[in-house]
Image (cartoon, rainbow, N blue to C red; front, side):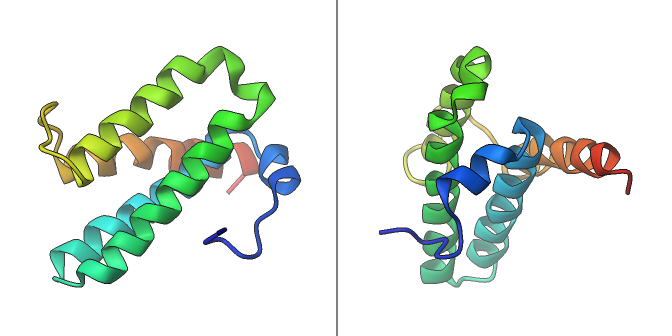
Amino acid sequence: MMLHQDLDKERWFKLSLIEQLANIGCDVERTIRWRNRGALESSTQAFWRVLELMDLTIADPKNHRRLREIVRTRYILVDHFVYDNVHQTTDKIWQNYFLWFNYAAAAQSGK
């Protein structure tokens, strides 16, 4: 089941990797925000959207050279939000990581 109902693979694949990761970062931010507010169902739904977008990014043929980093990022995100956070990441680490993609995407589009 697609959580992003208006998203199709071809449209996602047209985005640069930077734009893809910036969009993923928006859902990571929502995941954190909802969890911090105690809205666990909304947080869980946001995180499922993160995974859906990560999987589309992994499937995108143009990203094959960065596949190791993308898959590792997905793995550590799951560790942070679902499991025991053995990698000891923090919400702030994830916010900072994805913030740079938002800056780069804005610069790329001239904003």
